[in-house]
Image: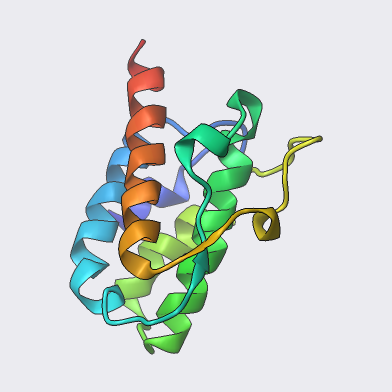
Length: 125
């Protein structure tokens, strides 16, 4: 699993990448759902087409903060950290993370999964 993240392109997120990330999130869900943090969580309707990677980067940065607060370390956190390290977020004109509404962890995870599903569907076309 970790090796698949190391081969992530910095240009675009592939269908395999989003599937691996969804699997990783599933493995961490029980642990991160304990968080009471309020997190920036762009709604799928708020994300412009050319800003999906930027929004995904926002989600990853917020998720890394939750992992740190919940003291999730080592192999459990490595798939998120590796995905984030290889994610390109260099789109001009996209809203910063702080421009989106703060949501609890449940809504945050729902919105993140919605974005990943959209990116997966788009990648399959």
